[in-house]
Amino acid sequence: MKTLVVYFSYEGNCSFIAEQLKGALNADILQLHLVDDKKRTGLAKYVWGGRQVMIKETPALKPYTVAMEQYDLIILGTPVWAGSPTPAMHAFLEHTKATLRGKKIALFCCHAGGKGKVFDKLAASLGENTLVGTIDFINPTKQDKQAVIEKLNGWVKQIQGCHEHVPLL
Image 1 (tube, rainbow, N blue to C red):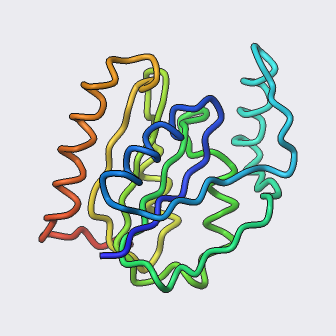
Image 2 (cartoon, rainbow, N blue to C red):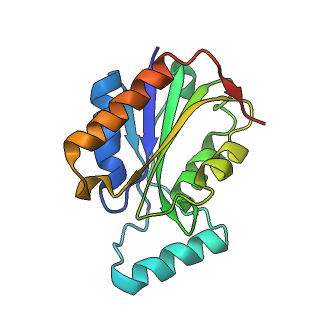
């Protein structure tokens, strides 16, 4: 099964998980980058990110090339901002909705203590695809790396051997 991991990472947590998935699944990887790549810190980071989520902004992404039709499994990863996927992930899904059909989809998120409705919101954006698994991580780069990798490896086995697929609406 040919696999693609698509993710956005602001502080490195989703990058860490994506790299582990790349190795475990021999997957291709696509990191999403914003055209406005200015790093905000402190309170400005929360105000900027929360505002984007609340007004449902779809920011411009730096160009990328990916042929979605060549992948059987697509894993999407996002930080949680205001209980939601990042605007960068929404922008990616908006740009690829015509080619992202009939795929097996797995979802992961990284957060600081609450995943909110991130998986429900992503599932609502995925249309004619099959959800094969979800997993969330609390600040994985600040946790025991071996424990995070073991949790991830268990999930990888689940999505590889998943026979009962949950169709997305």
